[in-house]
Length: 248
Image (cartoon, rainbow, N blue to C red; front, side, top):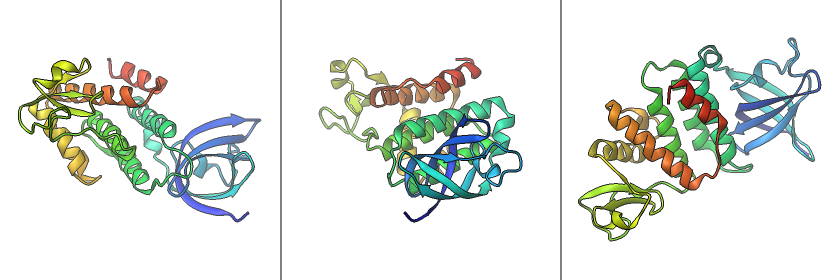
């Protein structure tokens, strides 16, 4: 088989034997894959820098029977600063786990990888509210998976005005009358609705460019968490840990 060259991020590392690693890579061309990297934990090994946790690298991969094998790699961006701050590391670890669980091998991931990298750049360097960054990635991931909520009319009757609730079960907005029939509907403020619409109508870079008062941000987090729980049936330890770090 021919060697495959692609860029990707190391989203998980598992040590096997003394210096070998099993990597989970989120790649541009072949989705999320497993790859073995022999000797990569060795300090002087040529693969060491490019296979570090969260390293964004260009990989040369050889397709094996059970998983890919790393033939070579060249580091592009290390995101090393994430590992020196416990809160930023917790954000990054959760987003990596969420991506690894939801994105499949052989998926078309070029756009999502770009969003992932933008998210990690903000986690590593931005001085703003990282909870907004997390929410934007989660919302855009739902869009990538074809699960974005409808935000412009009532899902039950089609009414375009007086939209007061958001329901994961219904798949989006509900008016005051129709929300009575959905047990999972939650009240939705105008500020939170504007933020949601901004995320879904902006390109992937501009989607992060907004602010919310504390109460509206907490409301947004609640709505996003409800949609993720509805559509992604998995409990993430890394999210529990992040919430502990944030004092939730």
